[in-house]
Image (cartoon, rainbow, N blue to C red):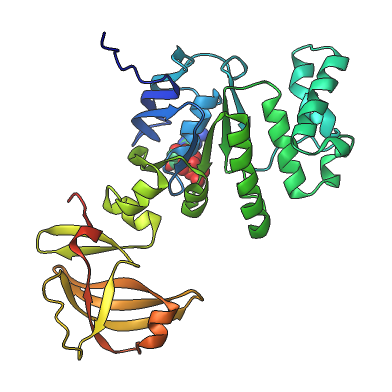
Length: 343
Ligand SMILES: Nc1ncnc2c1ncn2[C@@H]1O[C@H](COP(=O)(O)OP(=O)(O)OP(=O)(O)O)[C@@H](O)[C@H]1O
């Protein structure tokens, strides 16, 4: 007997979800999205693209203008935040400064009328789980940024959510701690087996964390895919430019995106044939040493005219044959490394 393939229920499904604040373009414009259960999803995009509004609608902190939100096939669009099965972790952690870590974590159980003994036991268990059991009596001001983040996580988890929503959770931390806490978030998500939906404007953060990246622009979704898929085959010019590390080049048959480590250069004086592959002439305008590689800025003549492009050369390759400012070069790439972009 043939089994009918039914996709496993998405943790979260958005159907034509729309938010309009006032006249003008909607902040979120009829987006459709399925987020797999137990996955780490990052909503990514520039300021104002609608990613926080999307997260707040999922959380129930923002009303919906149109469309639906499903959590494991249950329509939660009109449910109050506390009844949805989601929990939110905020940028500044939003901990109560006058309460101990334990009381911060137990707070929502107190609001629900759970008896003191039980709520303290559950809060202590969660603090142990994030390795903070020994600091349960400290106030937030007596904890490091990373420790505060763990308290915030424990506080979000105490309601036993199916989906954890994180709004720029790392942006208040200094760069060193941010990278460290990023690894912790990823580890927690895997250990807990929960679905995380994390809003960020940082491509690097999304690439490091996500199973699925959702790149947004002007209230719409430009691309959904794994970091590898999005980085290696940007679907649009916006994605190619926003992700960075790509050049958008106008060829005779349309625009293509080529990663800057996939562009190759050769001195114009060198007679080795490069004509079989797409390419063009260019002049070196910038040489930036970056450690493991050297980033060259070039002014190239593509089909649309002068175009600034960048080429990343491994340090050893540059050392073998350094390029100087003002030098004329051939710029070329392998056809399979160019991704056609829609006009
Ligand atoms: N309460 C509000 N009232 C009116 N307009 C709003 C409100 N909140 C957001 N907007 C507008 O909706 C659009 C999307 O905002 P949103 O906060 O979702 O973007 P974002 O991608 O999260 O940006 P950021 O990274 O700056 O937070 C923006 O144009 C913003 O100005």
